[in-house]
Amino acid sequence: MIKSDITIIGAGPTGLFTVFEAGLLNLRCHLIDSLPMPGGQCAEIYPKKPIYDIPSHPEILAGDLVKNLMDQISPFKPGFTLGECAQSIKKTKENKFLITTDKGTEHLSSVIIIASGLGTFEPRKPKLSNLDKYEDNGVDYIIRDPEKYRGKKILIAGGGDSALDWTIFLSNVAKEVILIHRRKEFRASPDSVQKVKNLKEKGKVSTMIPAQVDAINKKDLELLLDVSFDGNIKKVNVDYFIPLFGLLPRLGPIANWGFKMEKNAILVNNALDYQTNIPGIYAIGDSNTYPGKLKLILSGFHEATLACYSAHKFINPNKKTTLKYTTVSGITGFDGSLKEAAKSTINKID
Image (cartoon, rainbow, N blue to C red; front, side, top):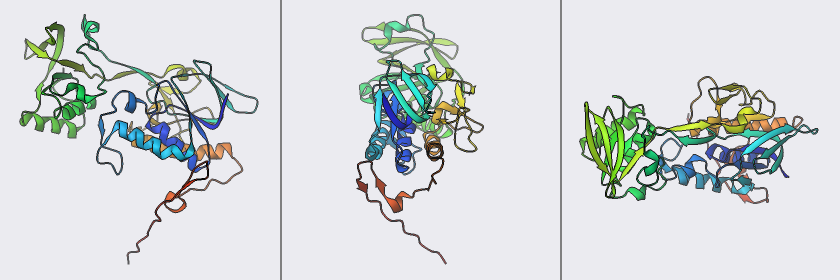
């Protein structure tokens, strides 16, 4: 049996940062994740995708963000149970939570913080009769290594942030990038839409909207796509067809643990500490919902901080929780090592 102060379900960026905030409060953490490596979707699905909304990083690759987070939490020596899914939960006589995974591993802790994101997921696929014949043979739903497409002709389908972000990124990698969307307007951020328009004007990408792929075959080593566009069927030869229609989320067994739910997400008290309707269990990041929820990594970091301070009070009800400023105190790991932090300088303005 694995014992800790906090069991964190989900080892994505939000779950990893939770270890850091808990460590500052001398709380030990153990993480459970169904993936074989830490990092969540950032490591498994788009490690080479640039992220633009992490403070102090104008741009950082998702995989590098995970690496930095792992370095940041290393002084607190978290434990990991990877490749296993949290299956069941029960309360012990000592008022602790006992979690059992699908492989029978038992975890005991005073607090649970759910940071499982969307849970397990599978890509939304276009409805093409023989699509499975070309999966991993010209058709990709996930871009793990952009270098795979260097010098190739690719067609990306989709109108959301992922489709446009990859169109922008791969415009500097692929020989030719075609972006199609079945509606007249894209659903991505205005900044991404403008960047695609700029790239189109420069001849670095081409777009077909509204349009959609109606059939797929193979000719020699290339895919032959039938694309409905302008009321006609246009034959398009490409090396790769990448439909990016989003993911179908599955929260999994956690959804049956007795939480109040809304649209496949866990309702939490966002006015206080992101605790669920079950005392001692918190939900942060994409796994939760509340009025005004924004599904951003940045929001998950904030939620993790408040959840950890509340968890400290829950575990130590008679002990005062003091806010720690790392610019003053530095970071002391569980092995007694101290990372010196620069002292903050306050400039007084008359």
